[in-house]
Figure 1 (tube, one colour):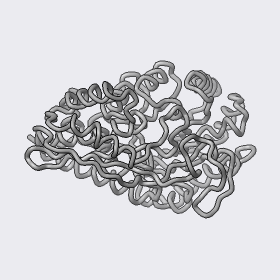
Figure 2 (tube, rainbow, N blue to C red; figure 1 turned 120 degrees about the horizontal axis):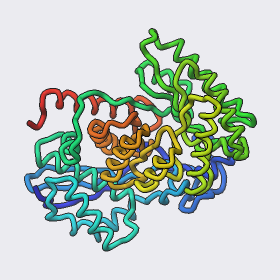
Figure 3 (spheres, helix red, strand yellow; figure 1 turned 135 degrees about the vertical axis):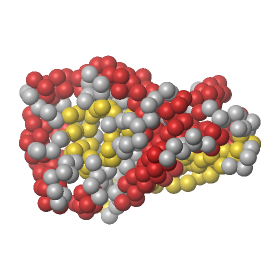
Figure 4 (cartoon, one colour; figure 1 turned 90 degrees about the horizontal axis):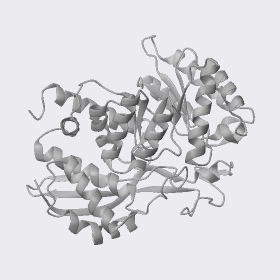
Amino acid sequence: MRVSDVLFSKGLGGFFFDDQSAIRESPPKDGFLYRGTPKTPGYSRLREPSESVSVMLILEDGQVAIGDCCAVQYSGVGGREPFFRGGALVSWADRDARSRLVGLECSSFRESSNFVRSAFSSIRGDVPKAFLYGITQALLDAAARSTGLTMAEVIAQEYSLPLIPSPIRLYAQSGDDWETNVDKMILKRVDVLPHGLVNDPKRKVGARGEILRSLVASVRKRVLQLRGDSSYQPELHFDVYGTLSCVFRNDLESIADYLGTLEDEASPFVLRIEAPIDAGSLEAQLDGMSALRRLMRRKGLRTEIVVDEWCNSLGEIKMFCDAGAADMVQVKMPDLGALDDSISALLYCHAKGVKALQGGSCTETDISARVSVHIALACRPYQLLAKPGMGVDEGVMIVRNEMERALALLGRGAGG
């Protein structure tokens, strides 16, 4: 099956781009906005609507394969690329990308993806990760349409993976309205919660960590109040965006002791803390996370730590896995760009015995979220982010429904 035409359209992401560096300094809030001067290059305000670009491959039989180019909420920090502007990407893609895609044979995802990566790298060394993310989604969709398989089956076949028709744990994110959204998560029996958006040391952690400690205790209490029966045992996962480095002045001993107090507050539930520190560079983050994990084990703590910042590529994920620097690695799909890198990263985590969070961002779209489900079903990460958005209902619905549809199809032998 070949591509007969290509269209690009600018769209919205599921949330907003935020200047994380500025927000860490606790700027004044004005309703939904932050007031202050941006600190990260590329931002005109501290909070800006996220953008996306749809790639539509018109196949020779008239079918349309779609993928969405997206970037993450905190673009431009933690070693990530600057967030992209949709209009600029559409202009570049129309001028330089379209002609190279027309006529492409797309029955094999791996072959077409390898061709596209090579072709575009030869004309532009800094091909945006967002573009690679969107075009490889469309190529995976095209391969599925060409072969009559689900996208999960395409991945399983091309990577020689066993296809296990069982669901993946869902991890939902609450945004700032955590009280309402935690209730929603519990009522919908989400497997991992609440994320928490703990991105402001002053307002969300506290001078001695008292605010975050209260949040952990409150979530635990609410689960026990609302769950109905003890068969529901969600895992508690909080993303703190490196803010503990700010509160405890990079003292790993103090951070480890503090994580011990959070573990007590979360009991009897599993506690997981994402990005407890931000050391400011890849090398420092690798050393710091490794040292913190060793220190926690010596103290007998069971709390798991998750790496996100400074771990934005397949090579960097391999480095953190090899170093034993985290209990879980977030494979943040838009940061990696091409889907084959995310697939390889998930499989590498398996090989190294490291839990994988197949993640992404609230700023993604319904299309990228649905594609993510199929990759998860083939690659079996420990947990999958429910996305896009911060409202819980939408992201959980999109991801869970796509998973149930795919499982139903796999159960009846879809595609042969």
